[in-house]
Image 1: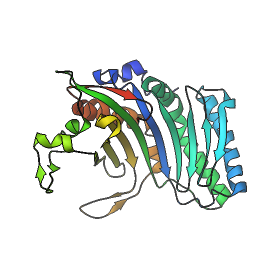
Image 2: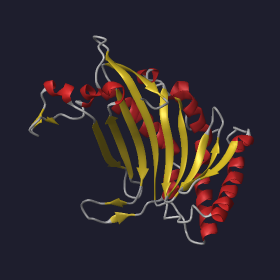
Image 3: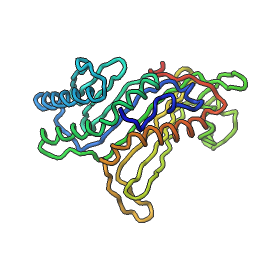
Image 4: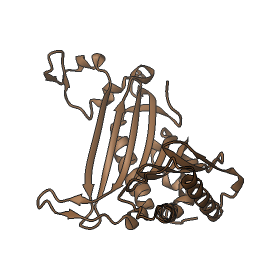
Length: 296
């Protein structure tokens, strides 16, 4: 087990983690050139068998064991090998243009234990799958861009000062300073809040120096679920080729370096920037619940 990421009690040492008790979903997505023949019976069977054997070694190395929980499946547009363990479950999925390591929602502390144990092997898993695809297709399947994506849902939001329940539009006003009225003119009047429907915000920024650029995404959705009482977040740490806006020159993406940055994606970005800074600021003055499942 890696020693870079501390135990959950030390990792989640701020107040907001007492409310953010669940994670909705996680995915490490590696985008590739088109694979093209996912529906071919012989091809998919050979690739699935090779991925299956590789994952047997991976779950042994991670200390998960119970190899009989590995299951293979396929459909017209994808195939996968999933580890259906009740605590450390995950799946490796191949689609037309991507290789994905994904994990369904769980308590945050359970996800943390899985991430610490499994993610040191993630780069090797993606590299092995791309090698298998390259060998079976007889053409290069490599990683063109990639992203670590962390999804959360919070709901039942109340003002701490008055214990009054609030709609998600009230909180979104901290991100959106103006809204269109009936004539389409932008207004910041609080009277418009009750008439607002769904609002989504997607904020991106680049960090890092030449040769090590990373794009950070803070996506907030305010859908109508449960009478507009929830917020859906996707926080993503992404790597791809960078185009300098001043010189218009491009920098190559080093996928090998990026896929080794699971600690930076989790600790520096998710915990420090996305949760302890962005989410804490957005939800300051409110109490809320989180969920590992979807909402009606």
